[in-house]
Image (tube, rainbow over all chains, first blue to last red; front, side):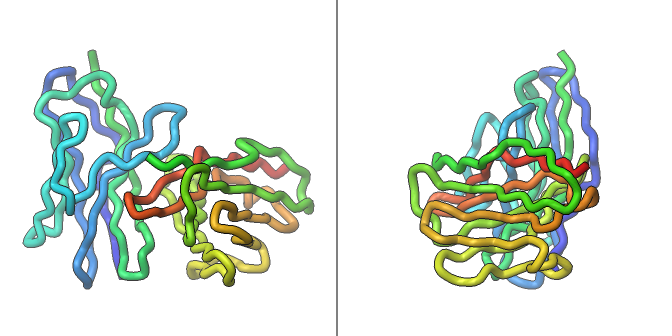
Length: 108
Length: 113
């Protein structure tokens, strides 16, 4: 069975500081991983996906199969980054399986 | 990106009544839509996968007779919570996938009194 673990429910950093949101997964197949973000009073939206290896809003995430991790990183946090972040795994049945989420607060 | 709408955004109903929630893909056709449930301060839990023109596929533990899903067209899926009870109160979110990714509706908050 698949599992997505986000160990931190809450994370606070100061503006300009680096931020890392942790995500570990467990999956028997070849993983396809995503980060979704939900800003206050807005719908869930895709932030980035590992297969595209892109940087969105300064965020990057690298899939580490050895450590089964897909941590989200940004070198300099901004106040507008405050949001709820969900790591998600796409299963072979084409279903997205979500972690429990991390609420990031960037302190001005 | 593609837009997914939900209606209503919130609904309050009495125990025992049925509630229908609509999910539409506004600018694309979705052969597959998904219904999630989110409890306060918890993650999204997949309830069922809705396939256009065929029966929905329910996740383990989700009562198919309780949560009726209809996917009548490529742009519309409906979730009907039948004989709702207070424990059904939750945030229900639909999602649709196209070639660019999976897009989410704004959610419907159901409160059963």
